[in-house]
Image (cartoon, rainbow over all chains, first blue to last red; front, side, top):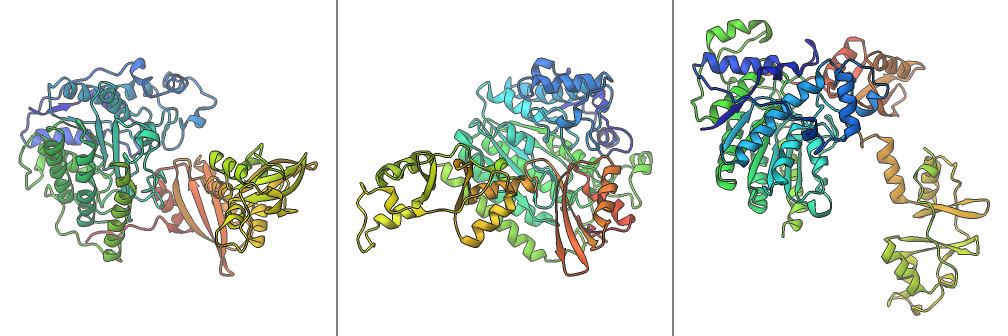
Length: 377
Length: 209
């Protein structure tokens, strides 16, 4: 039986009502699952301890988060990416961050102890956080901590990051580690935050060839996305033979996302999630931990993540959105609130150079494999 | 950014009496391609891996034997730079004279060296791509105060600018590429457009019908 991990305390990780990283997104997922008639009982985590954080984060960084969290002024907060326009300080941010980390660590533990194979942590995925630097809404790097908790007990991990932004924090923390492979598909850093994630970033030392990046063209659509995903992921997993797959399932590559420029639909996400679950079955004995991540369209993101929850649990994907759900969330669903669960298909958007985009993405995937393969043998 | 910010210091040097074989070994072991040649403290030349390879090549009319002195194959009286020179001056000198390195000399002593690779590092640092940032590209009319207006706008939102690169585009306008400490560049672009700026990146996303 797959597990869902969640606690209402996750909602405390909030930078304010006008900030895009909104707790509403997960509330909408839970409500949608409920209205669809699924009574999934989430497992409640406990917050991670300070000691847990120090497996990755520097003590002087954690101390500054704690001080800001307690409402104390920290003179050099900005030098650590804290209290910035993207990642403002708020009271209780330390504890809120530790709740999310606790959930992702619990997911890793359930898999490690053989209690579960498929786990969905309904939060976290804070992949930009560095050892001593907050960035892009991320304070504590729950995914890097979860990966670390697995590899230090001998379970090698493949980390797949489908957030539209490069998973820079996770990559950097594991850059020279041979026990973790990271694969990130994202809009090219030439155009999008955080600017990294080039194909030439392959890892260092014994980790070389195990950090894979697929920077995609702006306006990339689902068919091109799936094409490169299938080209890169299976051979990489085939080579690395991980024990566990950890997936950061950001939903911000959706066409309605206001922070980035990719053009995926919910149908594309369904294909992506089905592929990932299939790869987990084929390469890791079914062991896969999903976290959330970015995803800032309140119309699209709850549907993408609900879809993920349904597929993880082997439940059917509905045709329509429940009327009660649509009415309850009408005020945040935008000018053209969806009535069907899936986006209209096919996506009719004026995309210049569609063929050129697809061609360039394929070339990038080829260049990545050419660069990485020599280190695999 | 000054030469002293990017130079390798101290520089590993050899003497004019060093053999080609020994100079080659130093280059191999330390992974250098350029060695200043000093007589006591005085800089007398530069020897590169290319000098060694050409001098000892089987294709040369009379190849130098490995035991020859560096003084016989080095470039004499090399161009040098000062640690306080701006890096762009050093870059221009190297480009115009088609050379791969500049020894940095202070009071007649070699205190460091820069190569083409160091200039690439400088370019990377200048464009700020070693920090997480979002990219904005704005076309500004070529008038005094336009850049200031843009920076005031960003400062007003408490945004840190990691790097700014601006270059002329035709005679009427200049293109400014900024790397700002924000993941929300689309929102920013929208606000900039509202304020009358011509934002080239990020563009408006096509809206599905």
